[in-house]
Image (cartoon, rainbow, N blue to C red; front, top):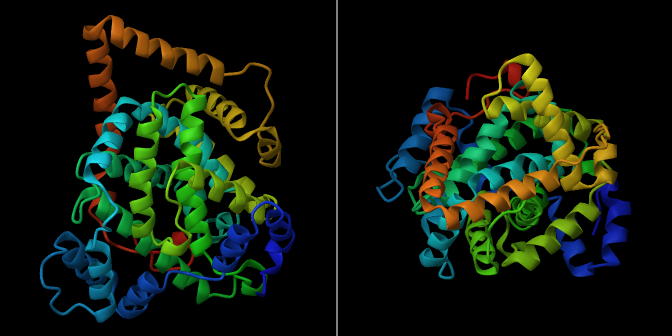
Length: 389
């Protein structure tokens, strides 16, 4: 196997821990997404409006006859509507209940931990080249967060559901971005492998499932072992839909954490692109929760950055140039979350009001209608030159 040069050192180190998984990860750094890539190629001659209409017709009505659609899109929809035998709707409902009970903690773990860690990898280079996060950090966080929310709302991952459609939209955006990058001279395949590779989809899925559950526990989340496995169960199905090859897909909490650990070891150290992306994320977070006044926004960004440092560890935080502060914030957050559970049990009325407020905030966050129902894809390599999508 010819290893992309950026991965050579990390691959050798990871092989000492898990040679089989390390080999599979690095091999998939040279793989894109054949199914989605074929769709993008076949639709590339259409203008943005025609492309949106074609995708909307297919994904909004996945069980209807796909009249006039290219064969690649028909195959894409057929694959995506074939729910695997192992997916259990009852387990998914358990995951939904646990998610809704912990939604604010899960979203905090996502923003402060898993997304930031994801950008420590070479996937950051693809996003930096396109300018998506640096120009639209809030939109990017909304996209990740809303996809996560819709996955865990009841019925969200059924074919035709909002979570199902959002996941496929993200997959097609990745394919279109990969197509645009590969048409340019800004990517070094010999050194970096394939942009937004299958390996990076595995690492992202592991980061947003097993690794995120570790962050949720650190924040004082209320998931039983069974509920934690149910959460991974839903993400395992999401992983198939988002383009993780089945032969490398994790199947439970332990294997998801292992995939994140070994995949991270294979990646080279965080570079300037990773620093740009990670800082863009933590500084965009206050806007997501509605803090708009500049002084308060800066204050909240400092809290998010410190929480992120405590979640991801000093070594990675230092590589991102996150400031060091004496006062810890995670212990206090953990105490607050545990106190909330005590109140819910001791004072059901107050607990019910807290639950309603949290659910209302979640629905407000997820109500990003323009993004939810748009199948427009980027039309230019650099986002500032692209049509709206």
